[in-house]
Length: 452
Image (cartoon, rainbow, N blue to C red; front, side):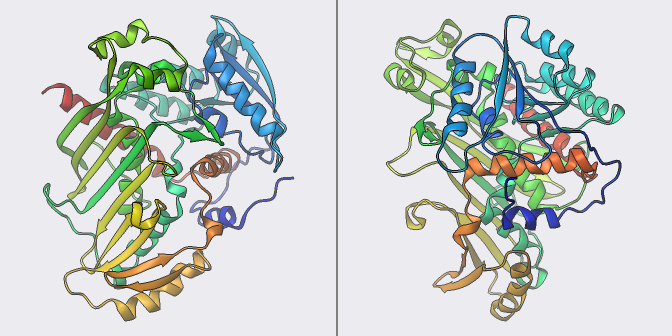
């Protein structure tokens, strides 16, 4: 039996609902049309009460080959190898075959986002639970369908959940914890459009390493009509964190709590040679030629920014995609929460050796030293070993390495949380309305951009 880390036990203890109608039958996973590497990362670990046989339904092609190779890599690694057995059905009728065979009870979705809304809806209607990678929808025209999908899940006592890995990044978890200490943080500022109370920025790269290997991306990943623009893709994580940190365990009503004030997007240019390096294709497919200039440069609308009000709090989220990071540098994150007494800032630049680092800085000349020393005990009760170091601008959070699991491990954490919700029927009441609010925010922002 796989050992459960102290980190997971701590997060499990924070569950806010009591179990009812527990699910005792083993969970049987189905992977549907896996076109994104996140589908494999769900299986980077084994799980208690989850069958090791996974049924996979997909069309023939490079996407499924890459997926199976990743699972094989997990099964054959030297340290903590997994023992998944993939039963694969290939064919143009793969989706219909999955719906008919009912070989499992949980469908894992991570692939072409153009198809995802249909996959989610029909899987639920057929009686499957769904664990979906973000984004579940990429256009506002699918928003009502997503609401109906959640209604179907409720009616059939099924679970529909998206993979929000960033909730398990330790610097973000601590940013949230310190924001919940009024003696230290005060209250969250309302901010202005020019100076938001909350800002979250994310920088990603097309050329990157996953599980030690150069990531091969499908060509459709660079097509905004299939992957979705950056403003509805990666920003899903950022919008989720704004809701999760600023209004913890509170239900957000998208009909009255959200106002998009401004949105913008821009393209990242990728040469044909760069495209070849990450796809192994010698030319741009026909569906990408609409975005190609001078026959050799692909323009990908992967960058986006949303300014909006959430319960009268001004927030800004933005995503930037570069082609390749500097040597030894991966995706990076910046975040600030401005309180009446302190600002909580996450930086991940050269000064931080590109590791996310949380800083606490006094705001408005507030004297928070004594309160910070006293309230640190509250944080340490949840996160033993966390400490603070005084620096010129305030304090730096010192986080033990045992908490720094990395992005890939966070897929295990999300899956464990999903399994907890599934087996114990204890998902908090705020999760579903807040997922709906999140996708309203991203798709409404894209709609605003497209009206310009």
